[in-house]
Amino acid sequence: MIKKFIYLCLVVALFVSMNMSAISVSSAGDTQFSDVTSSYSWATDAINELVKKGAISGVDSKHFEPDSPVTKEQFAKMLVGALDIELPEDAESVEGEEIVEEEKVSYKDIPETRWSYPYVNAASEFFYDDSYGSGAFNPEENYTREKCAYAIAYALGYGSKNANLLDSKVLEDNFKDASDVAQPLKSAVAMTAERGIVKGADGKLRPKGEVTRAEAAVLLHRAMEYKARNSQNLFITQTPITGKSTVTLEQAKRWAEKKGAHQRFIDAAEFYWKYGEVTGIRPEVLYGQAAKETGFGKYGGAVAPEQNNWAGIKIKNPIGDRPEDHETFATPEDGVRAHFNHISVYIGGIEPVGEPHDRYYVIKTVAWRGTVKYVEQLGGKWAPDVTYGYNIVVKMLRGMENA
Image 1 (cartoon, rainbow, N blue to C red):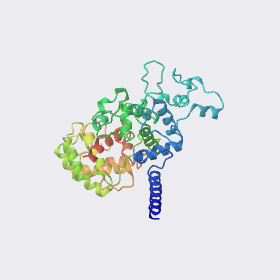
Image 2 (image 1 turned 60 degrees about the vertical axis):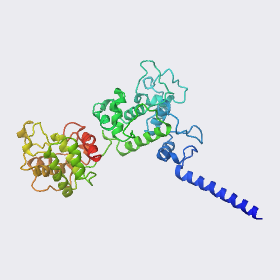
Image 3 (image 1 turned 30 degrees about the horizontal axis):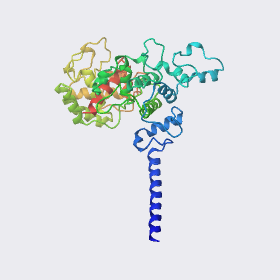
Image 4 (image 1 turned 135 degrees about the vertical axis):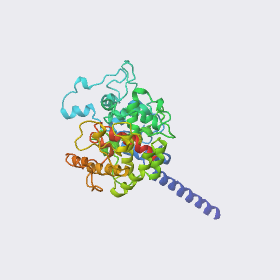
């Protein structure tokens, strides 16, 4: 009787253990694939979202093979599905006519009968062509991080037409192995790296590393999220000018010292954080802009140090780019206050501190006043260069935040 009782207890314990294990796996993984276990929690959401969109599927109904390298043709299908790239068949069914010949892509190793043909046909222009005139697509090639990044950048519209808009030194500034990125891919890789779509580990990007199916899902999920946030702007990062500061005064000073800034620039940080508190404008944004405009307080351009003009603000009616075409402020603090007043017109809804300078009233008359909410939007407004604001984010704010 005792033996039967012990046996029954063991059976019940085993049953409970098995069910608890199943519950644990289900809640941690929550996928239809038995091989996407809790150890893949970093990729589960991405895999689920892409499966829901029809961008990816398992190798069968129960297995995803998350550690298998993603092939070039598999990535083509994933790219098309994740970023809503129109398939040739879609155009045919809508228009009710044959696809014109120039819309078709011909590769000797991708016949129209191959499963990946429509996806390759739709996405071929986004892939880096390293076939050297062989006429091959190499569909079973295991795809690398740098090539995946390149394809994503082009699919998002940040490819050839914007190739020169970002200094690829961004890679050198952030990754120890940046020199390993193939030169033709650098601008595109930099674009995706700076948007957080492609991320490194331990300070390395590992551009030649093969991408697993789970990693590919994560890359494309990040790209989907960025596209959803803002598909209309040139730069899909959005860095608010107002709000809570993410950098302390001490951090900013350490960053400036490390950059070899002039002492006058380091001392001015006190005023930037003072007026940031008063206005609600993030002080690190304007401090980073001042670093860009003055060469970290060393000046050397048309504005002289004694003008205390930290932002290159011009007079009411300039006739050129001479020192006298720029505002002069009585003290370094007055110059900082004017910087905050000036950008407040760009933002809108912020009252000036003290009496504004003359140029403030000029900006009050422009049609786009009050529309600049993000640092990236300063490009083309504060300065003609459309990358002006984006470069402040990349080269100044990122450094301060990591100081």
